[in-house]
Image 1 (cartoon, rainbow, N blue to C red):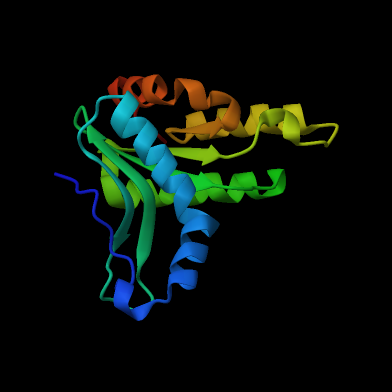
Image 2 (cartoon, rainbow, N blue to C red; image 1 turned 60 degrees about the horizontal axis):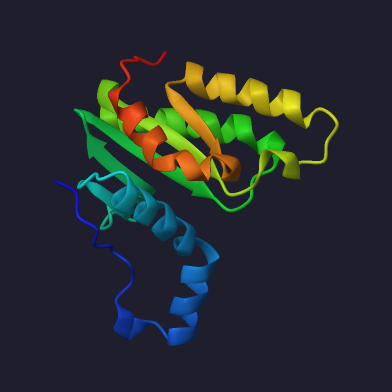
Length: 166
């Protein structure tokens, strides 16, 4: 159903430095998450850097990692860095995007490539806990670098759960 192929700009139009910079800037995290799910979770329908509406200017949407299984479509957004005050907006954006793409069968996860303890704010623990609860209420899941070891199990369990979001 899904393919691992990507729709990046044609290689003959980019210089090697531009390709390397683009990959290291954002795509390496997507490829890593894709690889962890594909290799360790035993799921076949896993794709990364899925581009929707590639021919329509202004309407292009890119999905970092997409997993199809158990009659569900799981969209995983990967962020290298995300401030705590940005979390509510990103959670709502992921909820809206997944509802539009997957309808009732769509699920989403937001992976932030930082440990929970990396946030120095005095109220960081409370903010993170409230945003994780908000993500669950919106039919999604918020994952951190701390959760990476359990990612394959988390993904397969999440696909099997019966939960209809708001």
